[in-house]
Amino acid sequence: MAPEPYTSGTITTLAAPAPEHCPGTESEQAGKADACEGCPNQLICASTPKGPDVDLPAIHRRMEGVRHKILVLSGKGGVGKSTFTSMLGWALAHDTDKEVGVMDLDICGPSLPTMMGAKGEQIHMSNSGWSPVYVADNLGMMSIGFMLPNEDDAIIWRGAKKSGLIKQFLKDVDWGSLDFLVVDTPPGTSDEHLSVNQYLKDTGVDGAVVVTTPQEVALLDVRKEIDFCRKAGIKVLGLVENMSGFVCPNCDGESFIFAPTTGGGKALATDMNIPFLGSVPLDPRIGRACDYGESFLDEYPDSPSSKAVMQIIRQVRESVGEPIEDEEGNEDE
Amino acid sequence: MATTSGPPSSLSQIRHIVLVLSGKGGVGKSSITTQLALSLVQLGHSVGVLDIDLTGPSLPRMFALESKKIHQSSQGWVPVYTDASKRLCVMSIGFLLKDRGDSVVWRGPKKSAMIRQFVRDVVWGQLDYLLIDTPPGTSDEHISITEQLRDANPDGAVLVTTPQAVATADVRKELSFCRKVGLDVLGVIENMSGFLCPHCAECSHIFSHGGGEELAKQYDVPFLGAVPIDPQFVLLIEEQHAAASGEAVTDGKGELASAKGFSLIEKYKECKLCPIFAKITEQVVAATKDNIR
Image (cartoon, rainbow over all chains, first blue to last red; front, side, top):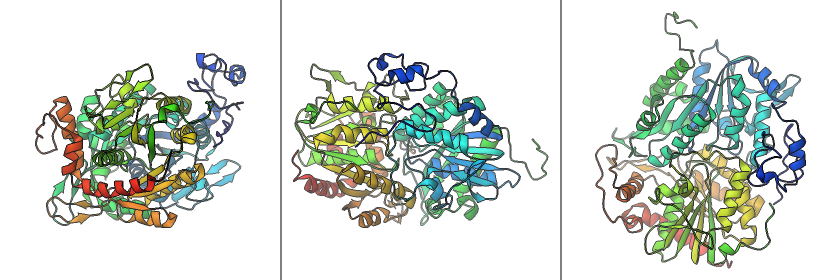
């Protein structure tokens, strides 16, 4: 298989694929590190002007109109990041005065178009940039899922190319003014996470909601993600434990599907000294709602899971300084 | 990537190489890899497991080897053996970390370099099967491992999915990936297919059901079987860990007894999932039988 070309957006065009231990073609060390010795790209990297990324001002301008930026992270896959992101998006957009944007940075496995009922939609380009796909009057979204000619196509991209697309999502999408931008991420601590943090750092990220499931195999990876947040200077707004416990619809007996043998999310939160936002029990209807692109919170507001999620979202809003106004509406910003 | 031609000599004594893939995260790639390895050992094969999930390695935990470290020999890195019988060995980045909570924050080129080392510099010795556990997606790790194995003639890939549409959509992408890079698909496993309530034995389809079988039919690849959710397996892993570390663990209700001399290979025979995996493994063995590396 031919290596992917290392060209994306305005990133330096390389003569050959980056070598192992490449310090990053845009880093301060580019062209100067030990690994650069003998690399065919050395001259290119060394000669490109260093200093701030030329696209950062453009990203800055776009993000000026976005008041709150919330990342949804987890070291582990399949714990419900996208499900939680979609719920957060729907719940925030409930408030018709608020403008909400949801961005899907999972390039290789975008799930949000399906979950938010926007499968098959297309992105339109205009003079002012790429127009997000609106699933409600005040809820726009952007995902690579809207850009594929064929739904089943694999996106076989290496990191540099993924970073290029993420930059475009931040620079070229015409969000307008937003109250909340919720960013869904793929599992891991790699290119996507480094890039989104690098591009957004100066524009002010409110923080990250970290999602986990209760079993130790998941907590292990989530611990790494929290370690990453610390290293990268991302504030952790709190930890959500998803899929905790299952109530049998037949006999109402509760069982642990992913047993919290080491104390689950709560113990991890205490251990890492971050807020624990709550546990969301499993409900088979959540998965079904996601498959059909419905909003679970609206379809089944009485489910214990919905109540748990609403409680968590309330805390998330408080932590970014936008508490839900109560009935009397006396809690103005 | 500038590499010498020909298959890496580190793989020359391995008879079969099988990748475990899934586009989606958290569908159970690592637990499927673990159980495939255990079932293969029970059939009398010697098995090596390579974990190329660099930012979220789970296999050391699965085999209760978290405290183990890799040894360097004159020929290269020696994998970690699960017990003295040396039927099963594991290689993972988890063995190289100082602390189990440390994050590995690496961009693509660095991950590629690590995978290259894992393929070329590990002293596997003689193995019947090498199982390769992968992270979700179709990116650096996947491109690198297929590049590294290009001349090594791998047998193919087992794809893992959960039944819901959101998961099968991502696994479809992985199937396209396999087609594109010319990797044979040995079959699809549907994991987390139903959950038997321990109180009333009613089967709940928490993540819907039938999605994996449908996917296999649609793409005309073998369907290897459906694996239900069994909390017992998670407990088995934790019990094993308790035995290895002497720590007490709880199942959320009470403490589990920590048994000395715990052998996952033996204990797994009592697990309800064991016969299901025996069948799946038979099919994998049959599918790889004729491949001569």
